[in-house]
Length: 133
Image (cartoon, rainbow, N blue to C red; front, top):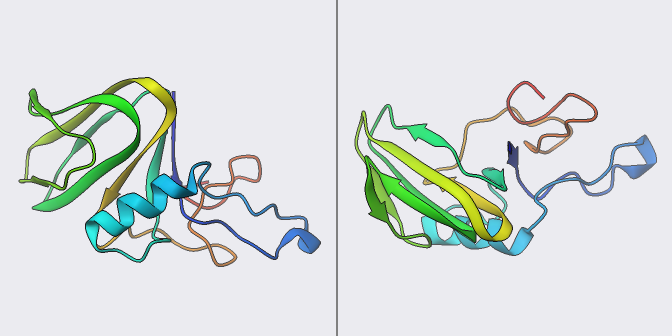
């Protein structure tokens, strides 16, 4: 239903009228990043209520942590909470969340997203951060 780029947000910006924002479930964000060897505050995709389909265009290691959802790589079931190696052309799919509301898709090395006010997090109400706000 709603997938956004999130990290730990923008603390200390409320005097400027900018909320902290960031991941709704910081424990899962930190966990997916630790699993992948990233800085624990690195940006990840926050999937709300439903996953999505993600096509690898290069060899990449990914993991999904948080709520429970069915995962597959090219139709073959995959385990949440494990590092998965995707080859170019492979598709990771996540279905509806059956337990919890959010799940986090992380990538080894993190997502290359422009930081705005010190964070890559999407702030949809302001139209900035993440991928084109």
